[in-house]
Image (spheres, rainbow, N blue to C red):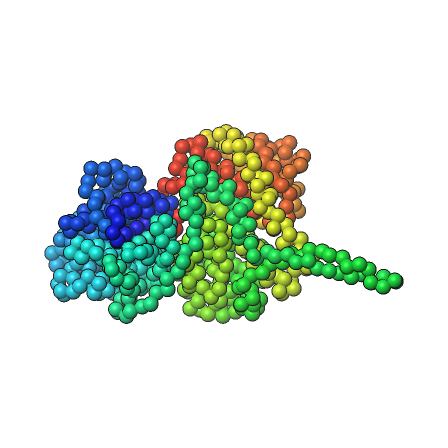
Length: 633
């Protein structure tokens, strides 16, 4: 949530800042603003409620010159969305301007103390409290800006990523972070700043990911300086970012979400590349006349560096605990079934937001798997710290390279699906499920808890899943057509069993997120324990009814729905002749193994949510009140 962009160099800052804000729109926001220091050392701040386009309109007749600037998209926490509460915020003298992501928990006490000392406030935000505190310390103690920032940050409680301008020092930007991401891009005599790398990669591939407690000082003509609050000089690692600019453009699609849905076959291929390997095996069959000619067969295998490097911790786990939020939690539910089935290790799946605030029983014999697309989810990071402090081995599954979660774990695996811009996760979900499948197969093989025949069969079929996804994507127009029928609905019910139950949860979440239609996912057998009371002719019910061991049970559930005049949208295996005659709408899926059905069945549910939302005229990529990365509680 929220987005920070900064620039310091010789170019005009405004175009870089505005383009950067647009690249960060996916994070979710309700207002935007920019601060610029021009050649006359004037510090101009412009802010607007609404979209970045509204900020551009506001700035159309303003002085937007200057080669030092910071910009922000705000997601309201303290104070309603308004131009007054939008960032950047001035200090009282208007010498300083600051942008901030995060929450200052003790802002009220600090604000009351400053008011008592004569400081006047203009907004309702915790951010203004911090910039006012920095200036008060700077003035009353006669300190330079860096020292004042260090002293102020020592007094605040909470999470922050900040960027600060002082019009008296126009060739400097100071930035700092704690529990909220911030990236510094290093160019040729210039610096860039971003909440992630997306605003930066157009200009440089050299970045520094600031760690918790880091304060970065960017000055023209000098190298990047990084200290901590105690002014200890640090030596940050300069990393190379490998992101294709085309990955964060729409590429001819009307929305990022649709583009990312269609990218999934290639993304999963990238996710498996180098991890699913094949080898030719020669076998000799003895006969009465001696050796027969060698027979060559191809075997598939899974190779994960984490298994090689940390075999003992993973294979000897007494228990695995998966911590995640939202869509990642749904992936975790699938991971639980995969790991318990293939590895015979007990697995618990926890909401990170609940895990961190109770007193969980965690031991050094446990493995905690943390799943997060962004790698910056605040609750998941806090859950990792808690589990690490209790001695558990921490394994991360993440998409964003260099983000906080991979840096906080003992080991892990990137999903490598590329930047995901749409707020409603699609390719990250299937990428997470793919990595969990690979992990379960690899551990199961090493433990000997899965037979070689099953291991080979599942691995080979997993490699074929991207082609089956392409078959499903050919149904896009059909799903778009049937979606129009259901835009009237105020409620949806999603049902599945076994591996398909988490897919039902995820399908319902997608519809809620982008169409604002109330939807709930249930295990199909639980329908009779309450939800069946809701079913009538106005209630669409999406049922994942592929041909597996639960088929007859699901068939009975569908008959119960139809007896109450419910409208059934059924996902069935291609060639189904029974449920297809009963359901109101049918989406045929290519046949695959039951344990891999989530990868295939999730795509039509993503498309259904997308097309319903488009028909309702909703902002698919930036749904209201939602942020891509939840970096505060």
